[in-house]
Image 1: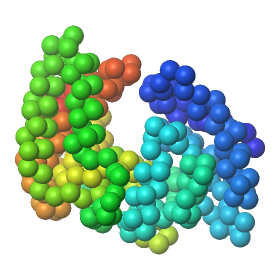
Image 2: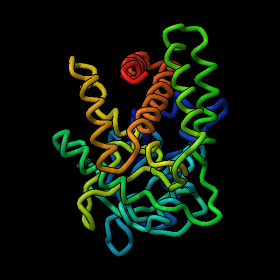
Image 3: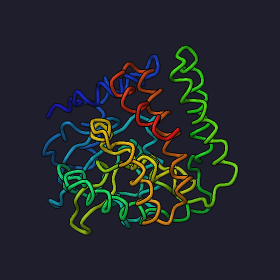
Image 4: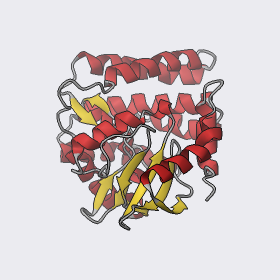
Length: 300
């Protein structure tokens, strides 16, 4: 079988690939080797799939359905493996092997075409938030996960460099960076976080109705993790005159339901929206950037 990466993966990785990176070109061969090493039977490549990894639906030698996931080293697959192992299936997909020399992940099979995003908006937010709560646990002793301070520090440098030539963008970057500094001055907790949580990262399962997939784990406060969920379906928010009011209600509802400080959630939502918007501009996605920066303007 030819393991050609879906177009969405090609576009997304092409935006961020460093010079001389040949991971995509080598992916079909790497997938063939990973399948052969585990004696898997391939059903199909998941399409459209994700933006950072190739997802292949497979069966193990005993016929049990599973998922084989291959991601470039810059997507930190070993960090994902460590987080999934620590959660051990509690709120997240279960890893089916402890380690792998090839960096591939063999995971329990969920229902890849059924995410919580398929539910009505209010129900989707409720189910997604409940799933996220289960992931917020103390990190393992001696962990090597990136911290929120470290990750957002790199992002802050890139934001400053990219915003210098656009006064409107710079006007949003300044309060976003100020919010980050204030938030990092006194984080209330240090928990293991999903890192890139949103509705599409919660899939229907057999063990539990909904399970999280695709973490980019980070250690920090819960408000950072929840912030990305606030702007889910941002295109719908922007399309209505009630978008700003709906966003404020989301922040209040999510903060109260998960016992998170509203102002801390607002601050991290602002920072993450501006960071994503500036990054979208940098990689040539102006429409996405426009949506994200307009959303961020409601919070600044």
